[in-house]
Length: 367
Image (cartoon, rainbow, N blue to C red; front, side):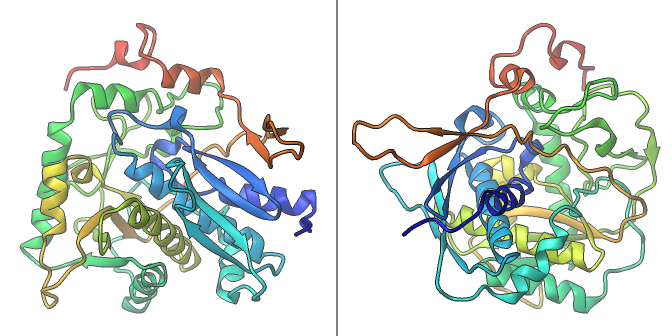
């Protein structure tokens, strides 16, 4: 099929895809055009050896990117479908966003304007509860993508989950914290196109509720301050029926869809995924029973804190759009599809390498 997308439309799709959330804003993906279809690949140079050894969260990020790309297509009335794990011989080729003859779901185009507005809000939320009808909409968004958003609002499950978050934070190994520190900015750092800038870290909680993740725990970053957070935040588990790579990608698609639905309704979100980084605690989180439901999906993929924001949150840096289309070498007479090449910046190159004495680990304060 002859490609019909214009360069401007391709840019729109790529900007949509790269707006997806990823752990520490590592952006663990690269993309390649195959005609008008977009391939999504995991970039191993941006993987987290300690924070995501199985690549589960990289798959979730790529699933979110695939869903966001669909919104880019839908913005100019082009229908798509996502094929997960299209090439079993290439485990890093995790999704293909395919153009289809059917018109796009109008609900996708309606979500597109909210892509640049979505934020991870690590600050305090209002004590006002999210209306039940909106929570139901977020649960429906997850179901659309073969996942389940399960609100943890009953005891003893609520306190048990927060206890797991606190326990997992205390069990973090130095290697994991050092790796994370290389993706966290400090206030004096020059603007970068990856990682988490210091202004988006939010204040430290005056009291450790367990629901708020401090990405700079154990580090001394100036001018953060402290604040009182909501007494009982809304906590939810994003779950899938199984725990395969296929399910991880579904979780990413569901995550992106529900986060954009939340943004549409003025609901903010952050993450408290510490227990999911510990195999034993992750299994325990997946076994939580929440009345009146005594059934649950098999695997917990994300832990979300949801609420109504009290302040505007600055955006994380978008990826540098210095993409270049390079033809991949091929022995055949016809060129293979162009690969979108994103060269590592000096900062990301340092993060991918072993820590040096000048890296943030050298200045980290003891726990």
